Image 1: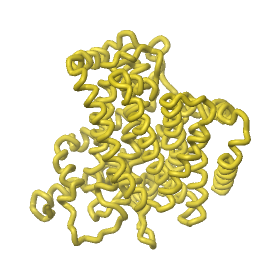
Image 2: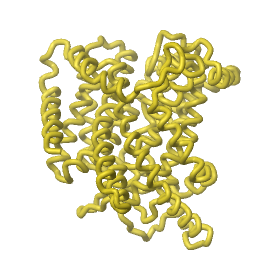
Image 3: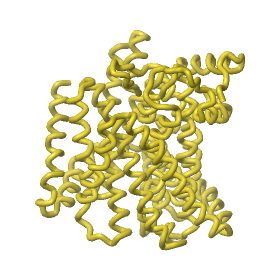
Length: 503
């Protein structure tokens, strides 16, 4: 552990000076990209080890790992995401919140949901869908929706455990997430070493993922959108990075209350802005919606004209949906652990709304816009494809989308900074010094992300995030009977009137 601590501290110290002398280095963007391409490629290829299913197409085992888990949780809890959908909405709206209760926690149900959504409703919905459709065609959308619906059960499971086994710190803050329920719950069952191994492995991967999916990828696509929209000469990504780093630092210094406050205002605004823009495009081309939906369903099973055919559409749909909604990854459980509640299962109900909002609603709207535009011709990918699709309807959308992308990137960064921080302090202890080291490292990686290529950013981001799920889902399989007992107890008390609505 001491060697790991010193290594990560050394990395932080190397990253921090980047902000200071970036301007003096010629070709810094190219040098940073070369480093990441050279030294992190092996990590992505290892995590995404796949089985060859047909010529030129591999099925990544990690994708199946997540999707199968979501199916198992759905059946185990009796399709709870559909049966209790209305109850979930009532809880997040505060109808079951006792106004006189001062239970442990730092944020409300809505703020916890907004924070978790700010980490998922982001560039995965814009750039991620663009990547999926560029490779897997319109049919990838169908599998994104299916993955999102089943993934609701995974979110329900992990978030319930996150609240149940969280730590309540002396200063009133809380720390929770998979690293805590893996270590504490396994200890209760007499498997201390196994639980500790899973918890430490998850925490390490969370730190990597916070720097990758929650940072590098976000900064990369925000900068790409700015460059494309305003015609800026490539090679000055570090300038965008410094500005974003300053904005991120101004929020994360205040901790979870500050993050929850910002995201509860920013997420609804940016989501409504993006959905409104998509609705305008769809209404303007209402006569093409039927054809687009037909392409989505037809392409899901035939995959004509796309890489890998049916398998290509399936893989891209599942992969990008999981990257977008993070169901089974365990990240959202960290945010939901900070909620003010005495009933762990209530936050499980709240969290299952995330994949529905993120994937079923927003990702589907993005896919429809891209399909209707006809821009998915193999020449563009990622955020540039989505931008071109919106701009095809009106040139003003290019600028609105640029603003939306930057807001999405910013909100995701501040949420993931909290996830990574909790993993960091789990490993190295709750102290102001440890928090400062992590936050400085995180802000430095914002600059790195704006300076590397999309392939480097997305490969490392995917790999780190999916690696988290290896440790998390093993724990969820073992601990899901605990969640089932919590579910039965809460539902019985609601039905008997012991737990009642306050609004």
